[in-house]
Structures are given as C-alpha cells and as structure tokens.
Image (cartoon, rainbow, N blue to C red; front, side, top):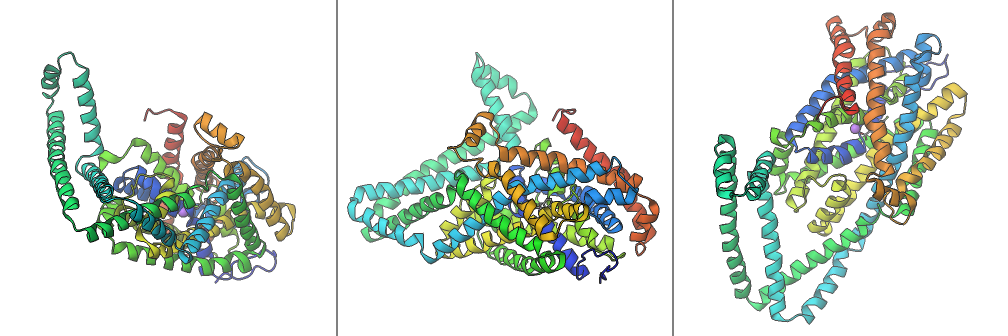
Length: 585
Ligand code: PFF
Ligand code: NA
C-alpha cells in the first residue's frame, strides 16, 4: 500500500493496485484496439507481431521502469522531475517540455477518434432498438413484388458469382505469397515487353527459383480457371433449377443483406467527412475527460479506472469468445501467430518499434507523472511488468476479437485505419440484429479504452500547471482541455471536403491528422524515450535509483541497467537515423 505523503501535500493513489490499473488504463487505448490490429493487418500478421513483442521487451519494458523510477524518485511531473533530480534547470528539462507538448498534440487527435467511438456506440444502440433490418425488409418486399422471374434469377446468379470471385481471391492470396505474386507480375511484365516473348520466357525461366514460382502460380491460376468455369455452369443450373418458392426466399435473403450493408455503410460511413459532428463528439469526450481529471488523482482517475478497466476486460473476453465460435477463427489465429517473412516490409520493423512507445504511453512522461503519485519504494519492476503485460495481452486479444469477425464476414485484414470504423460495422451488419448488440459492446469498449488513456494525456499537461504554476486542479484540467480542443479543430475537420483543411488534405496527400499523429508518435515519443533512457542509464544518481529498487536482486537491476544504457538507446537511435533517411529501406 502506498501511504499518504501528508508533508508534501501531493496527491497519491489509494493503493498499488489502483496505480497499476490507472497506468494500464493509460497504456490500453486506441493504440491497442484501433491501431495495433490495422498495422498488424497492413504488415502481414505473424512476423510483425513477433518483432513487436521483441520491441516491447527490449525497449518498452526497460523504459517503462525508467519512467516510473524517475517519477517516483522526483515526486513531480516531467518538467519538474528533471529539475528536482538535477537540482535546477538543465538541458534535461527540455525532455520534460517535449513530453508535455507531445501529450498535448496526441490528445488533440485522440479526442477526435475517441469521439467517433462514442458516436458509433450510440448509433449501434439506435440500430439495435430500431433495426435497419425492418426497413430493409420492407424494401425487399417491394423489390420482389415488382421484379419478374428472370430478373430475379439473374440477380441471384450475379450475387453467387460475386461471392465466388471474392472467395477465389482470398484463396489465391493464401496459396501464393506476396513475394511470389510480385515476382510473377515482374516476370509477366518482362515477357510481354520483350520482342520475342517465347524466347524471353525461356531465358528468364533458367533461373531456378523463378521457374518454381512461375510454375506454382500458373498451376494455381489454371486450377482456378477450371474451377470458375465449372462453378459458373453449376450456379446457373442451380438457380434456374430451383422452385419458385426457394427462389423467392433466396432473393429475399440476398436483397436484404445487400440493403442492410448499404445502410450501415451510410450511417457509419459519413463521420470522417463531417467536421462539425466530429468536433461535437470530441467536445463531449473532452468534457468527460476534464471532469474526471478535475476530480483528482485518487477520487477521479483511480476510481474511474477501477470501474472502466475490469468492464473493458470483460467486454473484450466476451467478444473473443464470440469470435472463437466463428468460421474465421482458425484463419485469424494463424494470421496473427504464424510468421510469414514474405509479407513483412522492412519499414514494418520500424513501425513496430514506434508503436511500442505509443502503446505503452512512453516517451512523454505519462508513466512518470503517474509514478509520481506513488510513494511506495518497492515493487517497481513487478508494476512495470504487470502494466506492460496487460497492454500486450489486450493488444493480442483485440486482434483475436477483430480478425475472426472480419475473416468470417468477408472483410479484409488489410483495411488500414478503416478496419475498426468501416469493416467492423459492415461485419456486424452481416451478423444481423445480434450483430448490433456486439457492435454496442465493441464500440463501448473502444470508448472506455480511449477514456482511460485520455485521462493520462490530460493529466500530464494539467499536472504541469498544478505543480509548477500552483493552479488549482479543476482550473488546470479545464484550461488544458479548452486549449487542446482548439488544437483538435483541424483534426476534426481533416476529412471534411467542404473546408479548407479537407482541400489541403487532398492536395498535400496527407492530412493534418496524419501529420500531427506522425510527428508526435514517430518522432517526439521515440526521441523523448531516448532521452529518458539515457538519463536513467547514464545521468541519474545511482543512490536515487538504488532507493527505488531495494527489493530487487542485484543481477536484475544490473540487467536492466545494461539494457537501458546500451540496448534500448541503440535500437531507438537506429530507428531515428532511418527516419532521417540514413538507411535505404
Ligand atoms: N497508450 C495509449 C494507446 O495505446 O492508445 C496512447 C497514449 C496514451 C500515448 C498516453 C501516450 C500517452 F501518454
Ligand atoms: Na496501448
């Protein structure tokens, strides 16, 4: 139990468990449920996940320990902490400043995405109580009443063939790796560009590896073609052969599904392009965040996390359990856990390391600030391990919750940022009325996860005003919230085609939103993390460190010291140098 430090008047967590929950609340957020699954999808799954885990272990965990250590020792937020430990302003204070600034920037786009999760939760509730299904059913009846037999048959044939084509494509993807596909495309291009294609083909195929690839791909293409011909005849025969009654029933089913999907696409699809609505939700979300932070460290943040985190965990487990009974579950598990080197781009490695900082809330002093509200001098390593473990667990569970559903309902894992906000609603719509219930759970949990993270982002900035400028907590929280919301305006209007920002987005190819996300997540956090690692490894007085780890065996401390001095900084430096463009990947 962390005791109260009455003499300094600084607020503290009620219990160690409360601290761990709040810190895990900070870590577990949009990064786990929105970002991690889609970057895993974009980077081809398995191997990316493995590299990510290595980054968490070699860079994330050690820096997590360093941040909590510094915060606990200084009993101050990042700007004050370095001053406190160094006995005055030094160059290290800049690291603290950058942290506050990064928190500010991240929060400004975080509230926009978090706002969408609120909007989607509400829409799911509305859709659940007044099913889109009913509307779709009415329209379907109309279609059947007005169409003749032949057009209904054709409608059904087209649908079946489209389904088959989609299945064929995903089969191709599974049988032929990305690298094989690329090699084959290059081979084909070379052959068709040559003056004598036959000769070019023979010459190129003397390369043994290429020959194998080409044989493999062509064999599968051949198979597919025969299959497709057979299927087409089969489908025609089937559809023309069925009784009128069956035809009606099947057309009704297909039509209804089509209409429901289209409607969900419309209700859920237009938020990104609607700036005012995005801003309204961001405002609401920010008001909630400010309210909790103003309530105080233990009465506000700790209490909120004690309710929200267990609920979030229960919701995730429910969704994973649902996924486990879906047809796409095995494919999802193998996508997430079996490494396939051909699907990983080199840039994926860098993305994995960058994401390790973001997901663990490292590099900007959030963990430092939360650590500073702890007065215990024991249990540092266990706490850091626990927080890191929980964050990683939730990220993996998020994949196991999302991919079975997308795989089972014909959505692609590579859908990018839209995976959660576009593909998931479509999948839920396919599931039907029960799907809307799942949708409520899913977006509700996304909202909870975002809220507990936003608390820590706001707290870093607010605690600066409280500690260094003697502001009252409610004042500090409110001021930070208002200013951040102003900075959030361009992010909210980022995709709105009717505004200057939306236009700029189209011209420049990258929006304000992506730009600030990139700046904060890929530059400021790794840079901040590097400074923190160097400070903890090389500058922080040994005496202060030892006071924080008295309960740890010396080999463990020495091991950490080695990693934080050498391994973690080296890895981060490599990534930063790559970003400057030193290496050619
Ligand atoms: N860790 C949060 C996530 O994964 O969504 C994001 C975050 C929160 C980053 C707090 C940084 C921070 F200080
Ligand atoms: Na996270």
